[in-house]
Every structure is written in structure tokens, then in C-alpha cells.
Amino acid sequence: MKQPLFGILLCAIVFGSISCSSNKDIFLAEEVKKNSTGAAFSIVALKNDWIYTNRGPNLAIDKQDLFYYSLKSSIAKTTPNTVYTYEDDLEVDNTTFSTVTVELNDKMFEINHAPDSLIDATESRYVYFLEDYAFRQVSRRENKSGYAGHEATEYNAMIFFTEFHLWDKQLQKTVSYGSVSKEIRIGATPNDGNYVALVEMAINEILKNSPFSVY
Image (spheres, rainbow, N blue to C red):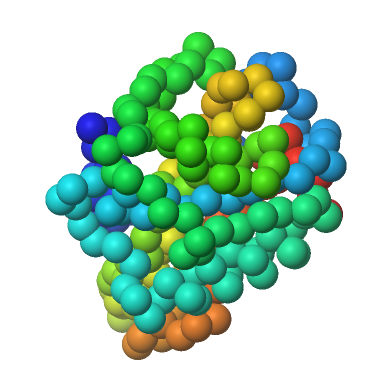
């Protein structure tokens, strides 16, 4: 079983600083030209109970609709291509996923490969699978110069993280893999706009480093 990475990432967040992901964290197959096609693609956010029998935590119920809204909003702002998203209209037996190792640009990655039944249920040649996606609220500390010298102040921040891979039905292989983490400063508690902004930042980075056209 492929091990989720967010717990490892969260340790880095709590005990040290985290930098936002860059295109060094997104890999495209050598034969794929970046931002070169107007082809339609699908996005499937893998549900935990499809893959894991005991793992934590899922998106809170009240944040699921907000996540999918943010996903659609982000897509509309980033690409002119036709994009299909799926919420509760796909049902999958978790025993049908397989852990496979893929190679991209001389690097090896482990992914949860979807069953043919799920891939075939999507409406496009290309299918993005999002995995381990989650929001986390954390405390941050920064040093500021003042009359009394350097003073440490604390503030709240929120992070969105996701792994993803892109399956090409025609080539029958994974043509992109990556992970993206985005962080913003927030008030005492996050509001809906914070969630939307984080997802938009993440999707923008993924698609800017994809085969698909962008604005």
C-alpha cells in the first residue's frame, strides 16, 4: 500500500519552515510538451475509503462542497480547455486499486493506480487523480525588528497540500506526477475565501506545468 505523505509534510510544517512547491516538484514525461494541447481532461479526487482501510483524516463534510467549488472555480480561471470533475457520481471498490511504480525523467514514483472501471468512467483521454489532498491550520512565528530589537510574533496560517498524477488513456501510462503545497496567512479562523484561494493557487501551479493550455 502506498503510504500517504501528508503526515511527513506536517512534521516539517510544525518543526520547521515549509517552502511552497515549485515546478521542480512536478514532472512531465519527456515526450509531453508543456501547455501545448487544447484537449479535454478530467479531474478525479480520490476518496480515502477507495484506497485505504485505515488512514486519516478525510476532508470535513462541511468542507467537501467548498473543495469541489474551489476546484471548478480554479479550473475556469486557469485553462480554456474543457474539464470534467467528479464528486459523488463515481463509486469504486477499494480492493481494485493497485500500488505501482512509475518512472518519469529518470525518477521513480509510487502511485495508487485506479482500476480500468474508474478510468473508463471518465469522459476524456487525460485523467488527473488527486490524492492525499488536505487543508491544515498551523501557527507560525516571525521575527520583526522594533524599538526593543528583534521581537517574535505569532500568526495563523493555512496550508493546502495534494499529490497528483496524470493518466493518458491513449498511451496507457502516467505522463505527469507531482505534489503541490500552498500556504496563506489567515485570521483567527479560516474563512471560505481562504479555502478557495489555496485551491486556486495549487491548481494554477499544476496546470501551468501540464500538457494543457492555460490563460
